[in-house]
Every structure is written in structure tokens, then in C-alpha cells.
Length: 157
Image 1: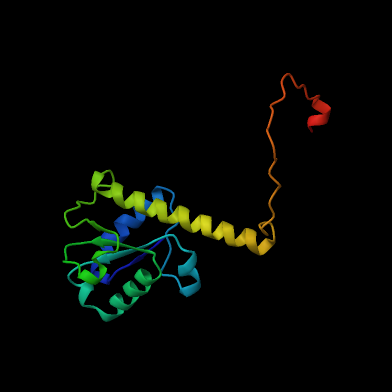
Image 2: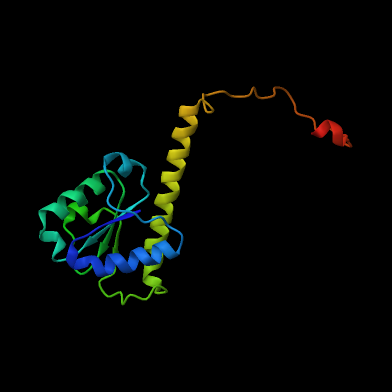
């Protein structure tokens, strides 16, 4: 995961980064396009100041377009264009890492990280040829369970 913010919002980004890092999430810097595709989530800190900065807006749009954005509202109204992106109101968050207001954000980050891991694993399996579409034939007819079958230990290994 990574954060997108302006210098003036570094305090909230740093506090969240420490909390997520302590919870076991890998927190990194803003990724390039290849890394963005493999990243779990991009936390976009939306504030009155950041919403006026063109460089921030371009990076936020890039993360939104990649489907990796989670918007943390730090006290600014969200434009309708990004209001459909998952967003979390932390305008009144006091920095307490145990505050329940963080729970939905943690859940969303965890879900996005799991999806990214699944996608990465699937692409690695496909690239290695281990997932080449092979399927086992399904049994036909009536399946009748066998009872009292004893498998010797030597044969089981």
C-alpha cells in the first residue's frame, strides 16, 4: 500500500502509515505504473489544500483509474467525480490508532491487499505453466462410497 498526499497532510499520512505498518501491511512510496498494477491499495488523503494542487490531482486520478484508490477525507467536500470511489471520513479523527472510525478503512485495505495477492499469485501460476487449464475427469455414474477401507501406511506415502 502507499499514500498520495501533499506536504501539508503528511501528519495524517504518517500516522496512518505507522498504524498500517504496525498491523503488518507493507507501506511504500508512490509506485510507477507497473508497481501500481500490483499494489494493494493507494490511500489518497483528500483535503482543502490537496484538492487545489494539480500534481496531487493527477496522481490521485491515476490511482483512481487503476482501481486502487481509497479516499481518506481529511475535511474537504468530495467532488461528485470521486464520490463513488470508496471514501472514509477521518476529518475528526484524533490520531488514536484504536479508534473504531479506522475499522472500515482497515477492512477495505485488507480486502484490496488480498485481491492484489490473489491476482499476483494467479499470474505467477499462469506464467510458470502450473495453471495451464488442465482439469481432471469427473466420475460418471453413481458414486458409491466404500466402507471399511484400510490403507496400509507404506502405500499411503
